[in-house]
Amino acid sequence: MSEQNHKVITRFAPSPTGVLHVGGVRTALFSWLYARKHNGEFVLRIEDTDTERSTALFEQDIIDGLAWLGLTYDHFYRQSERAPEHRAHLERMLAEGSVYEAEDNKDGTGKVIRFKNTNETITFADVVRGDITFDTTELGDFVIARDIDHPLYHFAVVADDYDMGITHVIRGEDGISNTPRQILIGRAMGAPRPVYAHIPLILAPDKSKLSKRHGAVSATAYRDAGYLPEALINFLALLGWNPGDEREIFTRDELIRDFSLDRIQKSGAVFSTEKLNWVNKEHSKRLPPEIAAEEVVRHFPDRDSTIVKAITPLVLERISVWSDIDTLCEAGEFTYFFTEPQIEAEKLSWKDASREDTMRHIDKLIEMLQEADYTHPDTIKASVWDYAEAEGRGAVLWPFRYALSGKEKSVDPFTIAHIIGRDQTLARLHVARSACDI
Ligand code: GLU
Image 1 (cartoon, rainbow, N blue to C red):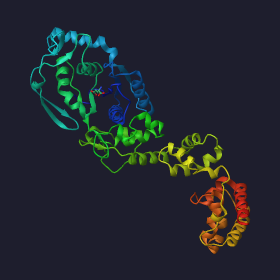
Image 2: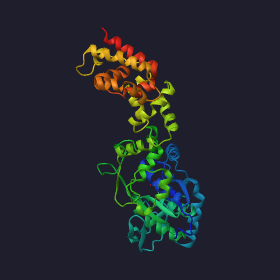
Image 3: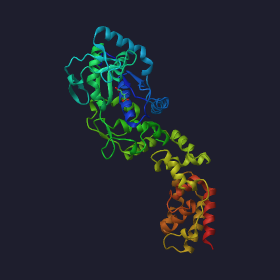
Image 4: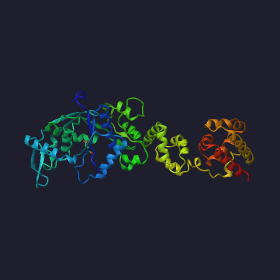
């Protein structure tokens, strides 16, 4: 089938027997990217005919995960609601003789519907893996339905793909072994054969199949941990696909523009949380500042939002995902921007500087910072720099920074002073000065 004459229609067909894990997201993503690239359509089909294992909760998790990731679909179906269409196909095929009713030789109690196998060798050109050939003789006359109202899995998939006009079946490589049966059924049904692209497995760093024991793997868990949807999509796009050059950071539109099935690799793709975190950090840095500030503000619910906005770039430097903010806050990493720190007199002096010298430096700092221009960290720096150079940077700037932060490691004092302002800067230096003077 040529792409010129047919609108591309792809589908993601998850069974709602579990949450939407990253492997599912990647399958959905590749199908979605391909449809969007070709101005086609993307179908979400919930394959919920296994009523014992399918739940509404899992279906909702899949829908929520795709919505969060912005993987929008043009059509939504539940396989269980398509019983009339499945029945119509079965009736027609029974009448035509390509399928037939037979004794169920498993328990001999009832009848099943079997496919009349033509026993031939089937070859299909998988876009990722090249020609794949199967001898279908060994499948025998396989069962396709328990009865006219209960088609089995392969039949339902093929009937749905046909009715929905699916042109490209993009799915995990575990679908390869299903393909010969589905091709046989589709041909007997009169369906055009879709293009198949079986994408490689996602592997854990130890090269085993990625599973729950390797950490959070559901889309909604990543959402709740504070990852950016653009970042997860960017990261997953590169698991099994590459742009043919060194680029690693892509917007959604760039992925749509550059995605192609022929750059999907055959070998398994290794999942790395470290890489995901890096991609997420890169995307956070590229967020419009007001959007980033809004998100950061949400993590400081009880704090002065003017200060929160001012420290947003510092926060972004220190995190990979939003939830890292909470961890850093719990560790008191940003507290000194909002409240005066507790300081310990013995920590005020630089290395072996004497207490008298430290007092003298603080007095001078107070004097200089009284007059300083607070519009930018650099203007504050300019007002104390010559003195610090003359007296020794450590001896002057260490007590300055410690007085403002109460921490042995923190942001530089010019930035802190700029953010907390003149009054707070002077107040904290006075507290430090009296702590020294005992
Ligand atoms: N429903 C199948 C699954 O969740 C996928 C069907 C298909 O993509 O052909 O494994």
